[in-house]
Image (tube, rainbow, N blue to C red; front, side):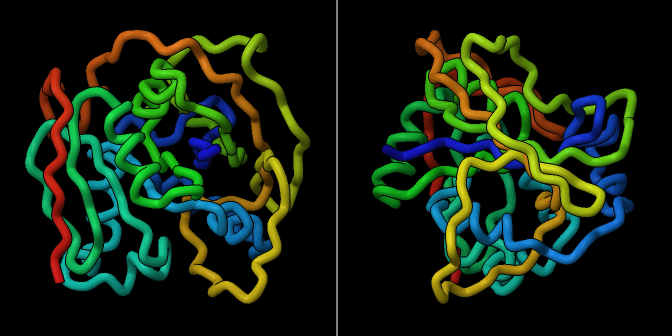
Amino acid sequence: MTKVQYYTAASLDGFIADADNSLDWLFEVPHSEDDGSRDAFIADIGPLVMGATTYEWIIDRYPEMLSGPERWHEFYDDRPCWVFTHCELTPLSGVEVHFVSGDVRPAYDAMVAARPGRDIWIVGGGDLVGQFDDAGLLDEIHVHLTPVVLGAGAPLLPRRITSSRLRFRGMTHVGQRGQRHPRRVQAGGRRQLSRHPCSSYARATIPVKRATASSPGANGPGRKCGLASPRWTDSHAAQS
């Protein structure tokens, strides 16, 4: 069965971005040698899904993605991406990007059909993860803890989920970051991808017992977007 996994870095007080939607604090954390954990995680990943704020941050940080797919491929290979947004966004050149809005369940079905047997990575943000959990579609949370306290910002997952559905599974400490992980996967000759800033080196994985699906909620507010459309739409953009 396809697993939906939330893989991200967070501050000690549970924020994935600061009050200005910045990740500069994450880049200030000392980096250790890559232990291969991200390559192990992404080896099973097919589609990516993210919110508009995350997508816009990636473009702001790596504007060269607008002119060619090389940087995207360094981080994500040729994986397709679904972006939940309430407004028009700029597509990436040479990358399969689907701009969608509304209920997450039709998008989930489309992602499973696009890459059968592969897992789905929710890159961010936290409210989009919450919507997947509301729909009973969240299976795992990978939290990469950093020695930073932000005081305010975008929360890791703005939902109440108790230990009746969450369980810790091991903790690995490497350098200045941490993560929990379900299993190690040998790369087996697959191309090693570049380290992404949202990867970290101390690892924790938290399995999630799927919730009973509730009625679809509105997409969380983005940095530049308004209210969500009540219906699901898919505007596919892939430029060559």
